[in-house]
Length: 75
Image (cartoon, rainbow, N blue to C red; front, top):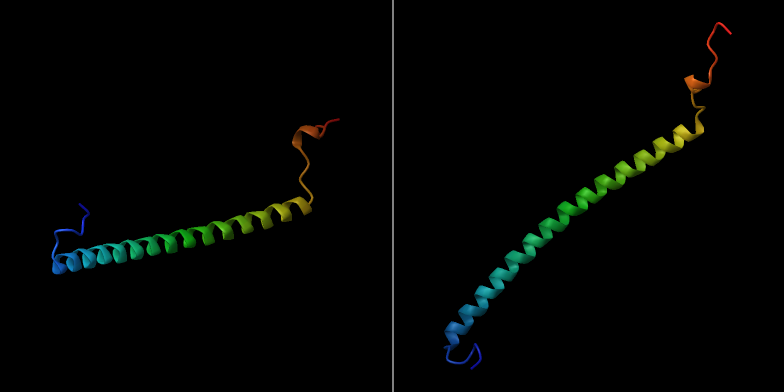
């Protein structure tokens, strides 16, 4: 016996409306989560781009000499 058998038309309609309401709620909840994740991704991408620019700037700049390579002043 399937789920719809033995149910009145009104009961079936109520069941369908209940399912639709639940699905609408789920869709809105998922949409909110997608929005939050997109904001996080945008922030991470921006941070990553900033760090790449910082690394490029440091790679082009002369690096300070390693103190271990320098001779003490008395030599």
